[in-house]
Image 1 (cartoon, rainbow, N blue to C red):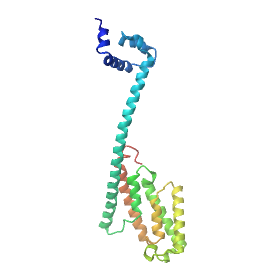
Image 2: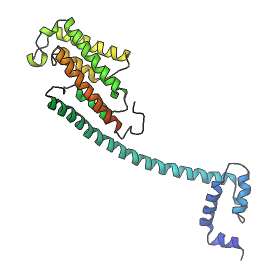
Image 3: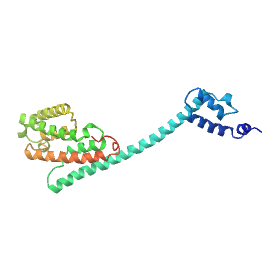
Image 4: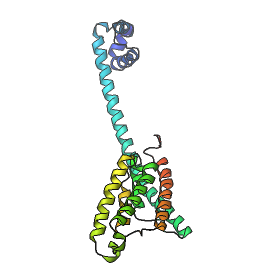
Length: 245
């Protein structure tokens, strides 16, 4: 019995699949592919065409792409969970580190606007607002704008909003001007950092006293947050293989 009869009746589907796989490895989309098929299919030459091989190639590509999509979807879900857990843990550790330094030095270097700063660094580390430049310059603009607006309207002599439980016209006007200047300067210097608006409002609303001690406190606190945030961004699983600038 000729050898091709054995392959036709007993091993047909399996052997044809193996031969098609071998043929696809050398398939180049040209007419030479059909001539090579005669060597692999001595008894089925009439049924082997370039179009049929291309159809089989398309089916394999579709199956491979679907499998890749499933694997990629699973990996993406895992990365999302890991990133969220990391953000929660890293943000707490960052605030704890700044608080520990403040307790060791007996200085109030931990103030409210550092919370949003750490949030941006841990949750959205790829955003420009999480960079060191944006953090330092943004808070500096917020502090400076708050102090200038506060003295411009003479609001430093009015009761603080949080302690006096009353908002004066001077403090409201100073707050509006300070926020506007902060946003404008950040846009000009390409140092957008949303938490800086909280810093300027802490100054204009009386949360931080308008003196040199406040300037030093905010400066040191922001520097600590920038350094700690840099390590948070470097170790973040979402950007560990990207540019850390």
